[in-house]
Image 1 (cartoon, rainbow, N blue to C red):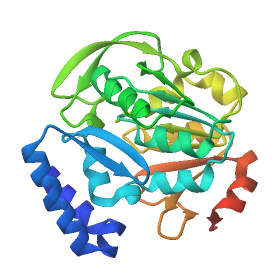
Image 2 (image 1 turned 180 degrees about the vertical axis):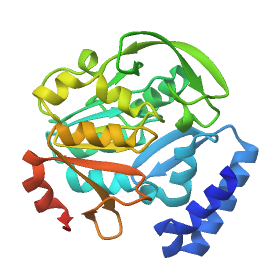
Image 3 (image 1 turned 30 degrees about the vertical axis):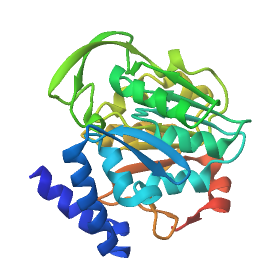
Length: 276
């Protein structure tokens, strides 16, 4: 069923609809590389990424480049020089490195990745691209401090604190409030495969004192709790349409919640068209 879901997702992707023949050729080329190699080096615009062929984000970048993820487009519209971007669940660094380029030398990115092996790829990619404005943390973020088992999968995008994996390792847990210093945050991205609400619960101090202007968070089984938490902290919840560059109402197929703090609505209106 997972393979069927991937095919359906591919056929619906805007990049496939725009260039179906080119995408099909890239899919075939990727399958060949995956068969022949354990790791590859890819270009994401002017960013060089080294990845395992089992990494889901590597597959998407090989298919679609900078259009692999709608978040890339939103980040390019939203982040500006001098901003601060926190990336929880940074994986191999695609979003962190793009964010670092967008916020420039006067800005800062805090990149947090739990899995030690994936963290090594993250760190290597930061160095490979000569990025100096990223602070990297090899930490597992949750709602409490302590020790927990962490689930590891061949596809690192599916590594999770809460969803069963192919194997487990023991990791030290830390809360957002313990790892992130006070101060204004433009964008907080949370992508931790089902443990997203736990991350929010460990960020109460942040949301009370320095609420991020925008939060991108994956929908999960705890979506209703996530929505309630964000709305209680004065966020407007929307989806992002990468075809029109508009924030639009959420619907059943929304994958990520784009939460915009009410104090940042003017910034959004200037940079992204908002439909009501």
